[in-house]
Every structure is written in structure tokens, then in C-alpha cells.
Length: 511
Image (cartoon, rainbow, N blue to C red; front, side, top):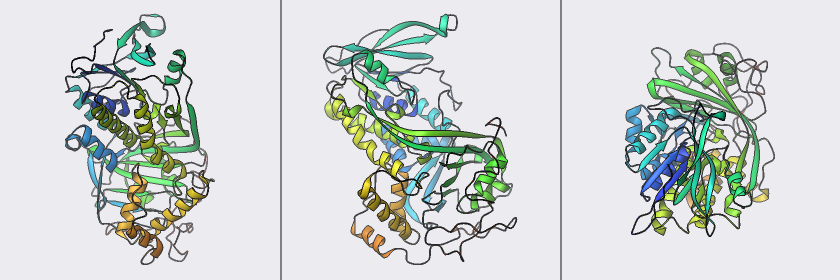
């Protein structure tokens, strides 16, 4: 497997990507636009089609390619949106095709010019893998583990030491082999051993920023009721300060629904469908609970708990080898409840693509790449740890006076979003992308200062689900910001502060 290609006479040589995560796949797509050859090394087996690949920790939870991610994919792989829709992904226009309950009330239904693709993670990965497999420059090497970096002269990385899986050998792995390369990308995920590999070459470990999230999420697939009619495709009930539950219903391939409910209060996620339904009853509106109650569960409930978000600051190291880059969760692991992992993966690949094309060589680019990645990552990171309505907003947030003023201003935009389509569009961009919209434009300032044009709506803007019949009496819910107690609609939870009557026990995947 060893070999070395010299980048001479217009040749750019060989690149190696460690890991076939979405960050690894998008990095490979960017490198294939520039390098002569790209090898993707994957520790596990790589399936054909949309089967599940081992090692994707969040694969069973709700995934959507938000506008920033979708636009980025189209830049890297033109036509990939059509490939995904042909494979079964569902295009959802925001907010025409969705019911969105924001911090201050329901958002209006209108053409925002934003759309997303909703699908299972396995389908998304498989479609992108197939596009890369069709590229003669790209080679996948499954069941091979990266174990060390090969250092070169003048602070460079010139390859990766790997070993193949060998079930007849002691420990299950064969001998080490050198895979030489002109550029190496570590996309091996949250378990990245890049700090250890760098230490073996004499480099200092990066400083880390860690934010405690205590997020728990539970997800299940459902079949809509027979004869189900609705004027929307999906629904999102955001969390915010004082209401630390978030619920999502997204359409996925095969006419199914993927439903996720998350919180960060330290309670284990629901383990059964009964517990998941009770958790839906603690949301800020009963819509999701009532829709789930009529649907048919497909398979078990899958739960996960995330204890922290972590950013390894490679960009702050004074000494770092050239021709080596860390991307994706190996660089920054964000709380999955924000749904920004895929967006950050493709944004990182775009940075790599743009800088390789502009620089003209993979040599001497490392410092600028690390700085550019950090600059692109920072808005999403700050949004994730400082959002005033994401799970965790009940705790004291970092950032001092400036952050608190920003949160108050954004809260005013959120209040105006219930009646002002322009403010609603900005809120969508702020909450669902990695870069903040132009919140200080005159029109935005007017929306923030004037506030909503009328009372915040207490019922979803739907002709089919605006006034669902009550199934049983329930105590009144805590009203949303800007909603009076007399007009707030009750929801079916027995307590808004607990997931279930008792902590779930037993198999987390029990149907």
C-alpha cells in the first residue's frame, strides 16, 4: 500500500482522508477537485446502498440538510440535491411546508426562499459515497485503521501509518503499512487520536474549550395514520428559556416520519414509545403529541445522551505540521440537538476547496487553513452554547454583557417573527444556519423595535391541525412568552418538568 507521488510538473500528488464520516466524504470531494488521487481510509466496513455504517453515533436520529448545508453540497457536488430526492429525500420549504413554533409563538406560513432536504442519515451518506465512488480519483479502503502520522522535514506530514483488519492475527489487526501522501485530513470523529499522533511527533496538544450540555435525545420512526391529511410536511417546536423541551417531526424516505424529542435537564431519554409519547406531552404545544398518538410506530425508540460540546483549538498552536488538517467532529464536536453537524462538515470542506484552488498547492497552506476553519466554525459554536432558547438556556450563559444584549435583541426579533415574514426569515437563518443574518439592517432594527404587529398566535397556522379534538382533560400549560394565560392552550402533560412518571429502565431500544 505504500507509495509516494511527487507533486511536480503540475501534479498535486496524493491525499489521504482518515474516516468516511460526512466530514471525511465532503473533504474527499474537495480534495478530488485539486489533488491527483484521494484515498479514504475507514476503520469499519463500508456498506453498499443505504445500509447503516458502524461508527455513526447519531445515525438513527432526525437529520436534515439545512439551507447552508444543501447549498454547500451543491457547490462541491453539483446536482447532489437531485440525486438525494431521487433516492427518497423529501424537500421541505420553510415555512410553507412546516409548522414552526418559535420562542414567542407560531411563525407565519410564507415563501421565505429557504428549503431543506429531510432524509435518514444512512441515505444521505450513501448518495454522497456513490458520487465519490464514481470519481476515478477517489479510492475507499475499508477495514483499515490509522495508527500514526509520518512526519517529514521542516514540520510536515508526509503520510499515515495504517493497519488492516486481520481476524487471524493477535488483536485482530495486521502489520502496519505506510500510506504516503502530500496532504492528510483527519476526519475520524469525536474519537480522533490526532492529539496523540501529534505528541508522538513532538508537538504540543491543543487547548480545548468544553461546554457542558447534558443533552438527551430520543427518536423513533412512525407511519402516518391511514388516510392522514395535512397541509404541512413537518413540524418543529423549538425550545427556549423557561421551556427546555424541543420536538421535531420531519418527513423521511418511504413516506415515514422521524420524530425526535430532546432536553438537557439531565434526565435519561425515553426508552419506549409510551415514554416518548409522554415526553411529547411536555412540549410547549400538544400538536406533536396528538399527531404521534394517531401514528403507527415503526421499530424501537433510540436514545442518546451528549454530555458536552468540545472544540480543539489547533488554530492557536504556535507549532503545527504543514500538510495536515483536522476537520469535523475531530475538530469541534457540537451538541447534536442544534442539527449543525452536517452543515459544519460541508462548510469545512468548502474552506478546503476554496483555499486549495486559490493557493495552487497543498504545501504551505496549513496555518491559513486552520485559521479559516476556526473563523467559519465560530458563529455556529457561539450559537450553540449561547442560544437563549436552545436546551440549556435556563443556565447562566457565557459571554458577558455583550452576549446578553445580543440575546435580548434576538429575542425581540423572535417576537416580531410571529407576524413579520422578514423577521421570521432572519430567525430561521439565525437558528438553522452557521452564520448570523444581517440583524442590524434598518428593516431588522425596525422589526426589533416595533415588535409583533398583533397578538402572538396560540394555534398553529394550519387548516387541518389548528384545533385538534381534545382526547382527555389536562391542566393548563405554562404560557409562551408574549401569550396570556387566558388564551394559552393546555397540553396533555401531567407535569411540564419531567420526561416520564418514572425514569426509563431496561433496553434503550425496546419497542
